[in-house]
Image 1 (spheres, rainbow, N blue to C red):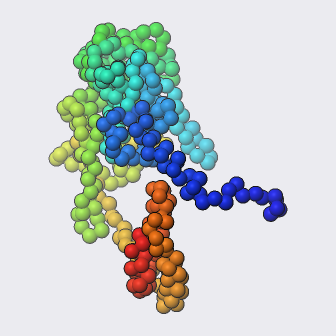
Image 2: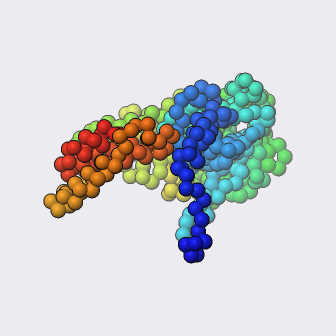
Image 3: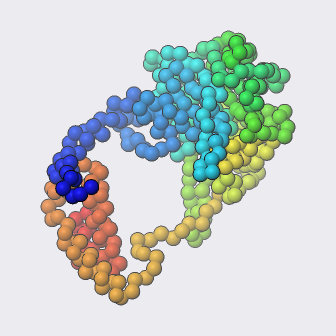
Length: 392
């Protein structure tokens, strides 16, 4: 198009357009969010986290815990063991409602989170009815029934067979899509089929209900019985979160740890992604070992391998990071940069009241001043450096 046909939408200061109303709306969004528990609202809530779909919009879009995907609906929790959609340009995870845990009359809220987990509670009025610790890498999906009620499960598939031979409160369920699931009740409640695609407890239950994929067409096992038995060993160790630690071990080397927080007894069974598998340290004390009798679960980030242990440990070589550029500047480049950085430093507004008032553009203004200070320091322009620091 020619220049005469292009009309500017506005020539006003963008801060005047985006400013007061946008900032006010943002400041109210956390306090107004019905999916955040009141205890979290006075605090800073992280953005762009893996579980943000639990609190955005209707709060019902999938979150990826790997190897599972979960949707928290108004009256149910939907669990999926995703299957791959492979294209020459991408690989995607296909969602299907493998299981729904029905929770009539309940509303979910996020009540706690840490670097590797988020805790969702379904409230019946003011009472916590069901607590769901969504922990990344857990071999089970877990719902802890805080109030006694009947367990009601349904699947989008047809139930072909239920094997109850593995003890009280345990059922191995065969579905017509070829997948096999283990379902465990902590209080050893009996389970029975309901219709073509339903499963329910014989009475009210209380405590943890755990679901785990035993095998499927994309995550097969060599010995199904051995896989079930390995999962049953870990049924009482319910991961609820984790403490991530970093400590220096040697020059440019750091030791990373995840100490899993567990409800119950025993070692939690978790799944490690490929980048974990290459560096995790196996040990007898405090106990961390591979469990290869269970399926190597498919994920869009590669095959996951099961590992039992209360603590994960691995070392990483750390890249040295500094404020100066990695390559020394030539004298010619330094002279050029001194001239440019001096102009930029002088352009900083002496009146602090002229700084943007909203946090987004204020942060950009401060970042610009500090970048000027760092460049000035590297090229030896102390006056410009100090002026930029004073204006940051």
